[in-house]
Amino acid sequence: MNTSTTLGAKALATVALLAVTLAPTAVTGSAAGAASSERSAAPRTELTFTVDDCEGCELQLTSALGTLAEADAGEVDIWSSKTRTVRDGSVTFDVPTRRTWGMSVAVRAPWEGFTGYRTTVAWRYNGNRQGDPVTLEQAVTKKRASACWEGVRSREATVPLVVEKVRVEGVKKQVNGSIAFVPVTQSWLRPMREVWDGVLGSQDVNICH
Image (cartoon, rainbow, N blue to C red):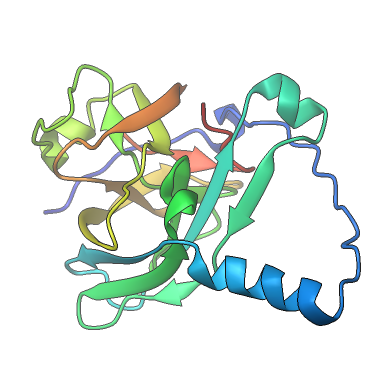
């Protein structure tokens, strides 16, 4: 379904992030083996996203839990996946289960122009409760949304996504962009961010709490 909507790229709310990189301490012998065993024993989730009419779309996952004060102090633990491409209507990630908590999903569709932001999946729109269905016609009327998923504790999970082409206000002119959301409202975390005609865009890491 063709829908025309406009997003002001310059009006996007951004989250300031100060990341601190800690140099790892070298470990050898039994200590290294123990650390490796601990990592391999951590629960993992096979996370599959299904999406129609988005062949070649690229998805990247990011998990960041913390407060803005912790972000300013460089104390937020941030994890990102490699970018993976939708093939035959789905894409699967093998991720540490704990990284699903506070997860945001960035989408890059083949049709997108120079928007100045990364299209981000809306896990919940204002006015919706967990389990509520969401249609495209409803999504484009929304003004606020959460980019943050509460996550899962299961070893396998499948999440349907809706990704549709829309017209947005790019950096220099109107271009093709995307609206991305879940068709059934998911468990979510704060904050609720401003969106334009349902389009959620990110210029930085989404800090979830």
